[in-house]
Structure formats: C-alpha cells, structure tokens
Image 1: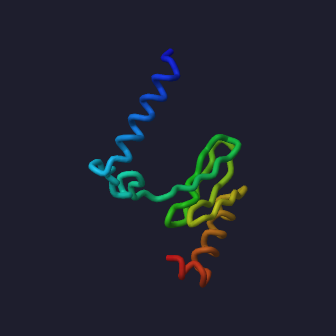
Image 2 (image 1 turned 90 degrees about the horizontal axis):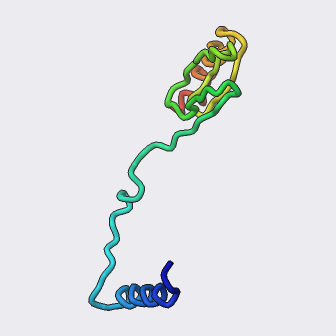
Image 3 (image 1 turned 180 degrees about the vertical axis):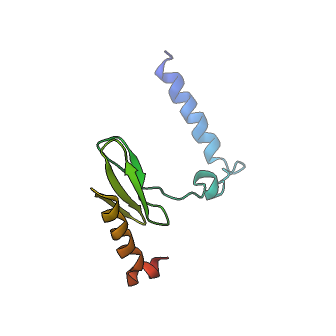
Length: 103
C-alpha cells in the first residue's frame, strides 16, 4: 500500500493537466458509449424458461417443464393451459384495430 501523500500528489497532477488550456479532453461520439441496440424485455417463469416479450410479432411457445403455452411479444406475456386458448388470444390481439396500428 502506498502512502496517502503520493495519492494526493497524483490526483493533483491529474487535475493540473486537466485544467491546462493547452490540453483538451476529447469527447468521443455518443455511439461509442451507447451502441445502437434494441432494449430487450424478458419474462421468466418458475420453470426457468425465459421469454422475450419485446418481439415485433406475437409468438406462442410451449413451456415443456410446466406443460403450458406462453403468448409473448409486442409487450405481451400470458400463459395458457391449452394451445387453442393461446392461439385464440393471439388471433384476438392481432385482429384488433389497435393491433393494426402497432404493426
């Protein structure tokens, strides 16, 4: 471990350089820090299965551990006991007037 006085000297030297008019600090473009990528939103069931609810389209997936069907995507996440229930709800959501505006 180094003495605190050395740490203070180092910090002061960095501050001195930072405050010099001859030295400028480059600002890289924001994209260097935040590369363009979609924010993904996931939901997780007790079975451990993870589902993307931010998909552009609705999807029905069978959870083999719990034996249920999951409707996910477009901000939705619902579980159903039967495949038919899941696909019926998907049909309702995709044919509703508000669903056409989202597409």
